[in-house]
Amino acid sequence: MVFVALLSRDGRLALVADYLPGVPPRWVLPSGSVRATETYREAAVRVLRDAVGAMPVRGGAVEGCRWAQVPVPVGRSRREAHVFVFRLAEAGDPPDHLSWRGTTRWAGPEQWQELRAWCDLPNVDVLLTGYLEGWIPDGRITLEP
Image 1 (cartoon, rainbow, N blue to C red):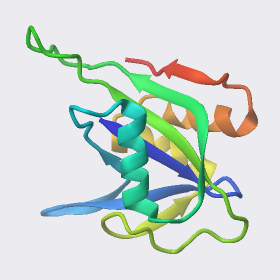
Image 2 (cartoon, rainbow, N blue to C red):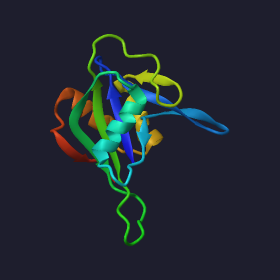
Image 3 (tube, rainbow, N blue to C red):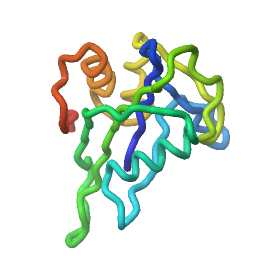
């Protein structure tokens, strides 16, 4: 599973509505599965392109990774969750709506802690804050199990 953390130039995060029958919508990061022929980064770029179309973006060099919480059958790869950080390349207000399913909302850093429960990604708020502030080094960062 890959998650796309798309940040606006002013540091707000794109969240999309996740609609489940009979439940109020949750605000989550755009996400998708990894195809057999893709790397995690290639899958993230595909999900990003589904979300933003041709809008110019810059890829960050930070990747958050969470290992599987549940046992995986013998002979199968571990289920992982990877978070890739991207930034809008253009200045100005971010678009009101992304082409990825549903409604779009741009959330400031004070709202990021809620993502831990929404996306089951521990410390994703710390990963994003560290990325913006520059104290998370480039490369893969392991998020708490």
